[in-house]
Length: 241
Image (cartoon, rainbow, N blue to C red; front, side):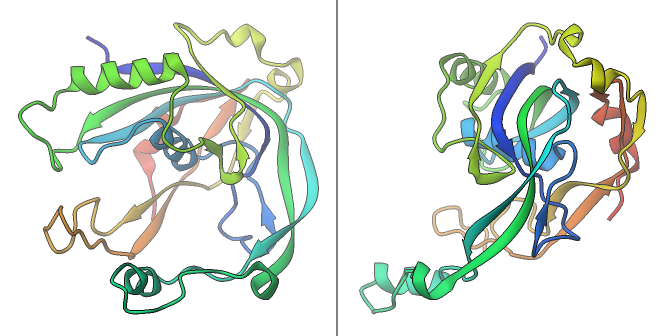
């Protein structure tokens, strides 16, 4: 039995931020596998499974637009949240008027992608009832019903997915002519995903009160888009840190 899926994803805007251009955000031309994994985790995620992107199909022309956005430059401190929960004081809030920062961004608009992916068992926090078939049926049901536990997004949380459709096959005849005419495009080095040093396992080995590591490194790959199709499976054979 195959445990893979094929979906069509659409959105009004998307931003798959290049890590080398982080202050003024600039999107990659196409989605990174890590961003699509994050989108799928918004639909369904458990420590026992890991999503793997196999293929990306770009349907619409790559169209950029420049915007200016208000962002906050601070993060809520974990210590402040913990102190508030333990009634020991602390202010787990960010005040936008004090932390606001206006930044420019070059983002994608009117995007539509076909995504082929599968999942693997990680062996983390899995019980006797855990099986590939169980997770497959849950993911399938949630995709069919449009269910999610947090809004799936295209790179950044302010760019939500407009729709996700589970399909039997991805119709590549619907790829725009302008994308097909680009032929074989070397996309250069792109972020594949961010790898955390703890690999999803609590560093204190306590799943009831877990502590995870913040140490991480970005893994890169160098894909080609051939007439709108990126064979991620082919190019991840040469991942680089």
